[in-house]
Figure 1 (cartoon, rainbow, N blue to C red):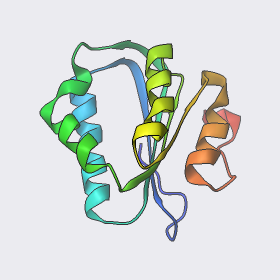
Figure 2 (figure 1 turned 180 degrees about the vertical axis):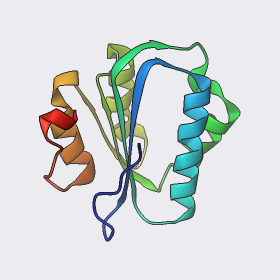
Figure 3 (figure 1 turned 135 degrees about the horizontal axis):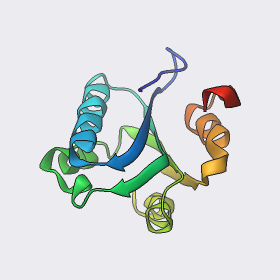
Length: 130
């Protein structure tokens, strides 16, 4: 799930979720982000929600998830979400106004553009990998 396209560049974590995004997945994601933060350096995140059909009530309200969100302010330089519901996409777009990071929401069909933007590599996966 997580990926770092360039060892000398920023750490890029890419998370893809199927069907229901629940508290356990958010906690697992938070643990991976915590580990990346502990390594220091620039961190970039991409959340792929194209196949997510349901968000469990309170999924993002776990103590671990909230603490990691707070700790990620600063280390995370770019944050993108693909295929998010309209309200979540609007929230991501507003992050850049209140947090010291670049953030963008991409439509489901724009995964390759989101990947390129987050990684900065210009080497998005082929469509067969999407």
